[in-house]
Length: 391
Length: 98
Image 1: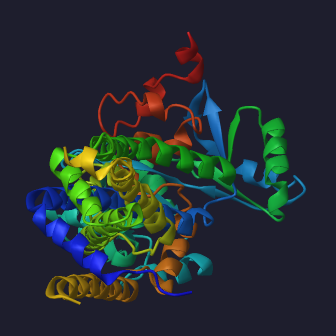
Image 2 (image 1 turned 180 degrees about the vertical axis):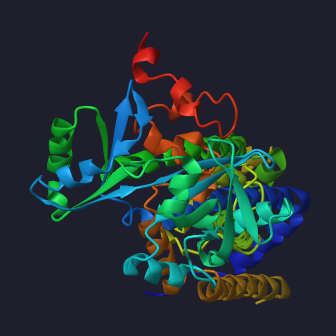
């Protein structure tokens, strides 16, 4: 098929864009801004979702908590052994963890206890900690915790205040790798025994029990059996957690959605303005073109090239700006909507994900609509008699 | 091709080149490496807490295991940030029905 691209029409279209000067510039700026805003919103959401989905499968399959008068209470460690009687359960481990409120800085640390001598834990800790060895008197801290402690002159150790008012001194043995800042920023990992001492939890008690099921298809059935066995227990499966994550994202995305709606609304106002008709000058131009022998088809082609050049330019520029804004400058302002405003807010880099779907979505939401909004009024004018239009 | 067409062609080529270079740069330097991914999975597996630090100030996430799942966060009634009793004063679904 012979090429239908008419270079002279493109040259005329370019001339027309330049002739309209300020108007073209204004449209290009607004278009670029909207594209950049929309793509930035999608890029941030997708990257954080990706980050989350990376780790969501590592979460426990079932968590069993004890409740007393509908409040979370400590659970007996012996229940873990009882749970093993349920067919399908591979392992049941009692966990000790909790929040420690550090009043000086007004932040909560998340304290997690591990069996430091278990090979599985020590191997994992070796991988995620820069350097250092965990022992009974030491702890590993997240980068955010380290910073807060440093600011409060706890460089080598930290004094935890126990429930009876006495102090437990724990040495800082190491800091978690900066690669896992997002997950570890407010975390402190120490031995279970030390943690029990700090929180005043007896040897026979734990915070909750993590259950591992051999066949993932049986998780819900096992959860049901646990509920029947322990009427007071609150049983949370990993599906519940995934659902919860989704809901939280929908909640936070709602804020983004508001921005999105405003952007789209602004864009459609511009489109509506264009659709409502051409200016008298533009009508005159079409009339003159028709009078000197241009066909309707030529006029439409010229308008098509004109709008395509302008919108494509703005679209590409918008994508370039949003890529730089999100992934090079880490999306200042917009990112805060997702990561919150706490003192332990992690400074992390948004991981780059090339999301082709987003690029197509924004493209089809903007470029074809703008092109159509330019061509339709031109077609209305171009089909009239040249004489009528010029008058 | 006249001068204007040439300039337009160069501008679009430049934009295309910037986009390709930017994507190549970001893919090589800013994407999550396998090693980082592995570390994240290991860490979350170790602590087992279903929480990410980016939501550390959001009681409905950080305290999520202490509250009914998918239940109260939309009515999240914080008295004070980080107050561990936050979840206890939030309205339950039953309360919001009345």
